[in-house]
Length: 350
Image (cartoon, helix red, strand yellow):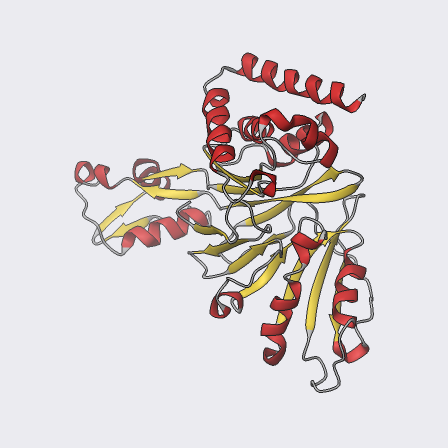
């Protein structure tokens, strides 16, 4: 993605943790907090926002390192996760003695995504021993926050063997592509006016005419000839879920289309029974989800260590399925999805 640099920190088989750097704004984010020891301290200190899928240890143990590097700096740190997330973060903070720091030196803005669709917030601080004082917000899972570059973060709540696991999506803002090839036909050359044109169109400032040198143009007509709207790219982070109709329907309705997906693929297709028992995905199932979200770029991670120290077979199998399914028409895509649902449902009866 042009606007977003992404790194799966622990490779295909390590703890889930994905580092994302927003090029346009310079913001850094983390998806999940597995082992993050290999992330350079200078990069970790840039992370002000963390999005946690759920609080199994391999997704949350890195909280302590994020906390530790920020102790001296009195920053407001923001973190999102599924209920009961307030108590989970509070327990982390209250586990330590804090007699040597200043009041308000530690401040965490904790956002809890609840099953009723509300997203209340608390600010946990050492000043009051990290007391939970809940404040209601207007935030929703469809719009958890807006980043500095206008990108919007959303989430979908999924079932993971009886607990909620959150999938996240960053949607970059739509872009205005400038059609340089049309300049000559209008007798124009590039200049600072291009950014002014884009600014006025983005902000819907069409009432006044637009001047380029001594020429005056109707802004809307000029924009129609020189600007082309493009849908912003998106990234979905998806891990730890059961493959079932309800979860896939929630992903489709909540996320629609995803330009890129980073998806767990814990088991090979031949080990579907293990995946069902553990509430994880196979390579086939991960590829089916990528297909359902009309993904262009498909990456896997969180491959089970039962396959030894290499995950090449899982990677190859997942990409093979993705290429196969993406080439199907809509009717056949529905058919392969339905066939997998039935296979899983049969296994659940045993």
